[in-house]
Image (tube, rainbow, N blue to C red; front, side, top):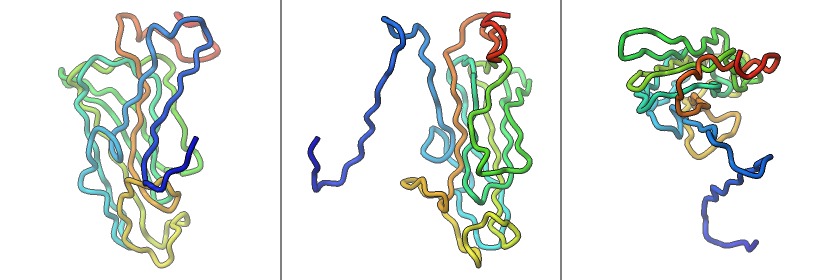
Amino acid sequence: FRSTPIDTIDQSSINVFFDDKPPERPVLEVILGTLGVSKVEPPLVIPPNAIDTFKTEWKVPFDMSVLTVNPHMHLLGKSLKAYAVTPTGDTIRLIYIPEWNFRWQFFYTFPHIVKIPKKSIISVYASFDNTENNPENPFHPPRTIRERKGSMGTTDEMFQFIITYLPYETGDEQISLDPKHTINE
């Protein structure tokens, strides 16, 4: 390893296999919102003393089997709701967090795999509280907050919705993700 005076970004990755062959169905991930496949609307700018709601939407290009979702905001996050609307108009609820807590961020695993059909629209809505009434607001007085695409600092703000999935295969909906149960209940 050698250092260099040139600014660069490293996106190295490593695969660890606990078997002699790679998995037949590797788990994949897609990010909506900040640094993801869909834009935040309106642009994530939160003026001082404001509570604002933003959205991001993504049209699913293939049938997918969702394992987990991971909403991601920082200290100004207030609430988050995500769902998919299928091409036939059915709604698939994904998650609703009415009172965001930055310290409780993690991947939410479904009891069973959730199929989201091709051409469904996943919609995610997030509210942010940039007021003095937000005890988590790191700035007193509040200041204008803009989406930071190059920083992951806690006092920077972002709006992401991370989906962990597999390409859909018939019967995936029957697979339990509960660690207390067998694979195919």
